[in-house]
Length: 508
Image (cartoon, rainbow, N blue to C red):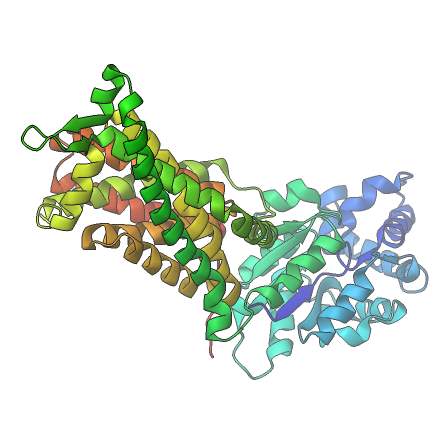
């Protein structure tokens, strides 16, 4: 949980355009440079002044320092107050402070000016620490400002880097945060804009003060202790209900199959039924078994929709606040590659180690499923059953766990339940590992569509491998299993690296 928020000043807490641009205009005029268009001077908002004069007007350092002095000549008396606090900012800071978050200001503006601006807008009491640059030109780089803010905020205690957000509107804020190993929140309502923040690889981006407030306050909603029964009940009841409805629907489908059998046309009858030669008893082909299974899953899934919808809506809202930054297209491809390699690798490892051959329970399940026609099996076992299972295990079970427990524990418990649900050791281990992957992808992309599609992909791929004999080709080898394992691990590491979940040393 994040407890410490470092705020930039210009373009984040306040809109300083008029004061900064008119003071830059004044400084340029004093040096014989006329710039009538204040909009062209917006790039001066945020970065250190000396570097901006050197970059935008090609000044030597000595002349840039002279321009800075002229800027301050007007700013300290007039430009300082040509400023506006963003609507809703004061109430947000008050709420954050009252809820126990520790707030600080980390600005490239001289500290003396920062203090006066905060006092002017009556928001100084909300900040434990205020750090800016020095009037002598030192500590102007954002990483130095952030470092000093952290030092003052934590004092003699170890700095908990993973509990800090740096919040700002320019790439300098993002770069300063990254240099100090803390996560950044870019505010697109400031002067850097969405594109600059994306190119700087801000960890998160919000587009309004209201969105920033929701994003920061979500930290309070991540864990809601309710006691054992209060947290287990909302997920245990739907899970048991799913099992009972599925069982009841299976009996109903079996009853229906018996009732309609006399009316089934001969050509279709042979595709669905058979009779024992010796006893004359009615039997069911794999196609009918697959259809009855799909019906039971479908009925159970539909029955749980009213329960799942509000849970999914709440989860979507929670996850949207953590996925405001657009995902890189390559990550979708990496996730698909990881999913395919995980499925293929697990199937190869189970087969090569002989686990599958030695499991009578698994063989019985596989024989029943694989006796259906390929198209029927793919639709029933590769589309219908994954959709219903995801509605229960990621849609309800995982999300209810996520409301009450930390992310790793929620992933672990939901994966364990998913493994136990399969009722045999082979599918249990496979289900546990896939359960971890599915909840990981759900959390990573923030969309319920991901676990649903990947579950369907996994079932279809496994069904094709077992049904078509592809597993007996060149890919059926320890080398192929090793490659799949390596690709899966490397792919997940790449996804993690791209999220830039940087962690500093944590002391509990």
